[in-house]
Image (cartoon, rainbow, N blue to C red; front, top):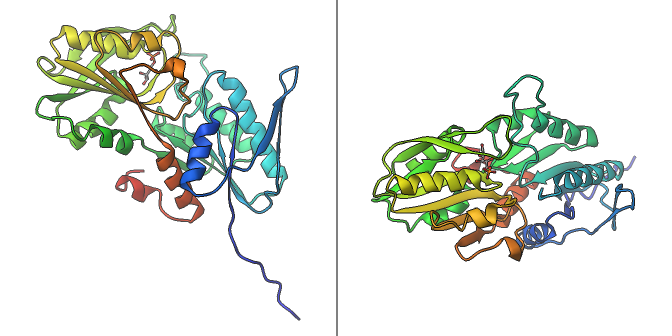
Length: 324
Ligand code: R5P
């Protein structure tokens, strides 16, 4: 009886939603491959359709979808893309969500609230995702919401590389609220600079409004580096920067992973209280959202390396000194 043999070659396939196609192209370029074209369309009534232009049978597929506004459209499109892959007999589906949707709804702050970050994980699982990859989740516990492996990548090495020339003798790392203290503490270790913390308050009844209550730590005569996971309307950062300058800070630099930049962020980030803003391109940044004091660092090399490690059964943890 003759043996049935397989060719045994694994095949890596990158597909992209319509939210941030340039990011998928950049990732594919780093991997020296192409993005398999998706015929994605939206019908007159808003329904979305997706079909792949070539066979993906047996492939290890990475669906890259970023989440700018209108976020719900992009979530739905990625779910439909996953469903199409499942029905096309792929071997494994990894959903790459550089910016995890609804990450800020990670717990119930008050009664009768949803935990929408969990709902997202359930939706991807139901659609057929085997694993999720994301960058700087708003809260690390979101990893536990998905019933399967989650590769939680950190943008910190990308951002730190940019700041390695900063003079740390006058530098203070600042957490803009209590939620970022742990991450800011790691930054302060890495840069060998002290830490300050801002006590921020939000009124739960008024969305997107912020007030600063007090600054804990020494900021007078210091260059303050505020680190945050995301900038949405920019109010958190603007209020923090103003408070720091009023407390005698020499300069204010902002580092954030996800540039959501909803209105009026672009205006607020150019205020007299902010000297520099550094972000990554986990989200698309059109020219209209760019300004002279903004630096955008590419996240594609990090994503490409992590994708290759997953494909090659390597180690994503090794990319982050064992921390991921
Ligand atoms: C809050 O916990 C987050 O880390 C951000 O600081 C916040 O969501 C940014 O929102 P905005 O820019 O609208 O103040």
